[in-house]
Length: 232
Image 1 (cartoon, one colour):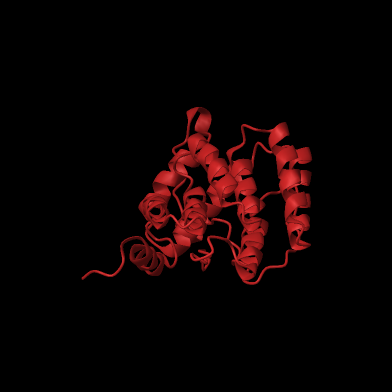
Image 2: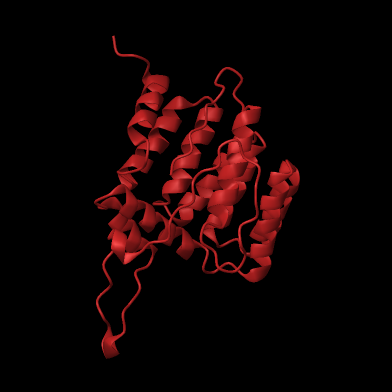
């Protein structure tokens, strides 16, 4: 479920093709499993595949122990993140990530969902500034919802505002330092800024928190070369 962006290091900005991919990333991640508002179609050069909803058949997780009265307690984000760290297969890891993303959205109100959906539509029409304004409004309504900071960071990065994206990701990671996708986007943003050492450090969090991240080996080697060069 990785989306790889090829950064133009010499110019320190996102090129046209990468901007489309970033728009696709926002369209995918912002409402990957939200029940309130369906995802809007988006224009993307390489839209990521949808993440399947977790199911017991894939072994994503075991039911939590029953509480008093025989009630089963659903695992929260920290528990699912622990399972992601020890997932036995890529399918199980993908299912777990989908469940985590669903829980990240559970406190978003219908009004905020509408703003996020409108931001998706704006990006599909290449209205990056309008999308950022929509997400600004969403954050005014619910500044305590971590995923909204991550979404605005993606919109900012799509608009070649890597500094703004890094600032938003700092807030997102302050809320949840184990947000794999926030670390992935931070790695991309640091690459846009030309700071490959910082991009490498951010990526290390990704592979630590999500060992089965698709394409991790290739991305790790690519960033290692950019950060440290070829060994002599």
